[in-house]
Amino acid sequence: ELKVEQNPLFLSMQEGKNYTIYCNYSTTSDRLYWYRQDPGKSLESLFVLLSNGAVKQEGRLMASLDTKARLSTLHITAAVHDLSATYFCAVDGYKAAGNKLTFGGGTRVLVKP
Amino acid sequence: GAGVSQSPRYKVAKRGQDVALRCDPISGHVSLFWYQQALGQGPEFLTYFQNEAQLDKSGLPSDRFFAERPEGSVSTLKIQRTQQEDSAVYLCASSYSPSSGGPDYEQYFGPGTRLTVT
Image (cartoon, rainbow over all chains, first blue to last red; front, side, top):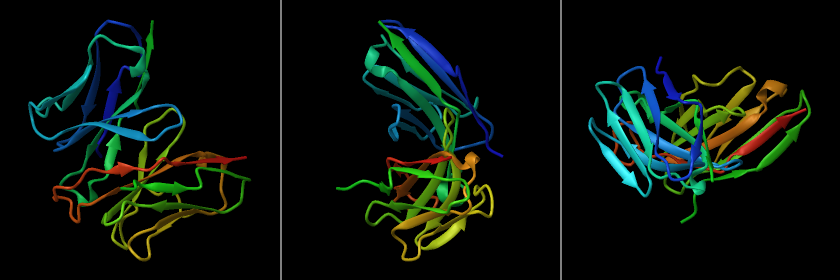
């Protein structure tokens, strides 16, 4: 059974500082996703990482993937209040039928001034 | 173009009532997924359709949950005799990919239906 674990579960950030969210998964997977969810809203896709060593960046967010370690990180640079949200990583069973996603438990981020 | 839409957005049901949740996927998307998101948790897979065929229903928590997609487009998730533990947000997602290895695999999520069972 594929399991996905994120840590920390909650992250209180100070504006201007850097932070990292970790995502570990239990079995081989070919695609890893990062999503953002604001309260009461649906999931917004941030990144799709497809191969070992993949790195993607958008604004203050950068995601990377190490398939050998089964680890992805989401790095936040110089946090700002607008980044307050819950962040989820997910992997799919690419070689299993349907690409169903298995999600981590989420990291709730609160950026304080 | 239009994204994935779901209705109703909010539903309050008394314990024991039946509910039906609707999902309109992006036009032309072959794959359709339902997920359940309990408060403070990540979404969990319920079921998957490829066109009208339900290929995976391993995530449905009990036989009170039933999903259909009779014409390969709109899907309905039905919950019979609702219980308090069914309270959650139900998310629908669709993707183009007609097979697990296809290139257009990314899932696009709808806004969800928040179900509260009292």
